[in-house]
Length: 445
Image (cartoon, rainbow, N blue to C red; front, side, top):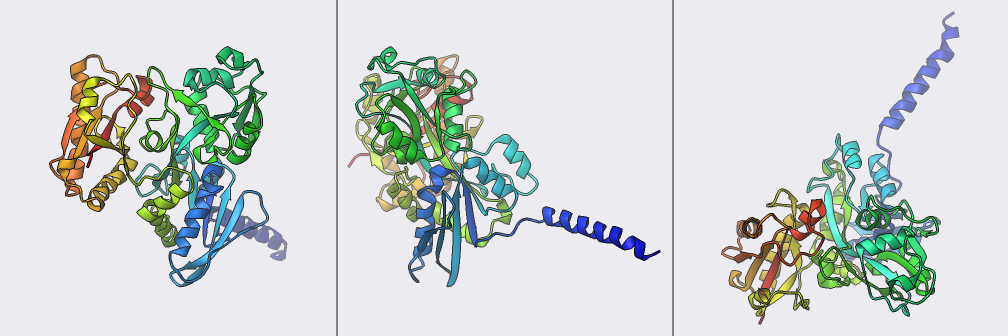
């Protein structure tokens, strides 16, 4: 009689074991695994991992394919031990799934974590927290056409209509009489998510005629061979295509370059992220993230074709619409390639800004600059009256001044410029985030 229950008992044990296996985090095939964005994983992440392992100076770093498309395995030394790191670049959404199920140590994403993703991870880590969210580089979403195309700039609104199929011929835009061919990234791509959010929004849907790509480089190469083509890719994948200047609302059209992208003034600038699981982050992954965010890692970011967060001073080309008062205010200054932006309300600095405080402080130390050499200029989004805008812009500059003072950089000059000189369309969350900023200016020598 007892033997008749053995099959049932074995079945229950098997079900229990299977449930336990599914509940436990999956083991990593490699010592460190980075899953996600093709924008990051194609070139930048492998370069960062190679630089991280090479800094130990105990032997060469080997880079090889594991036989799968868009995946690389890097082998080197860290702390005296052999380390194998996998970079799997199949799209930002795939990276979240890998981090969530325990396959990945690091999620590489070319977009911020979505509210649903933050909620799914909430029991283990807060993806919005400084310990989990790491801005590793700034990228400009470049709008690409054939080098022979006479069109040089477009508004975001016009760009949306083009990719929705409402504008179908280049002659409607001052170009040649040619049917427009659309090139777009695939649905798993963070590049696509960024374009859909910033350009298409809720008003437009991508035309079914668009050709879709998993790789930025392949998309750019195909556009550069098609006189009728238009596409979008990360700034590091421009290659042989022509880049258009883009405008948002009444703000001037800007081309992506080191200043406009690093400051995020360019309307299609975006942050590139790596996410880690908070306190569950492995020591190896945490050490790698520290390297990436530091000066050496950011120098690699620059060499890869993306925009480093290490500040430099440049003399900006001021647009004809720039007021004379602003020209006089800044005539003896250069601008640092960093803007301070805010996460909530009007004075709470976001995660990137909190790290940029130290970068500005380090810039001053490296270049023997005193607080007298620095000027902070705050800006506000469009407000109901000038006085309110002026007050908000000054409060923003004052909040950055105080935060720098807490790092030992005191008595910096600051002012507000109200709601003038917007860099994006006024109003809404986007306008508040982009126009509400603090610029950093350094006295020319």
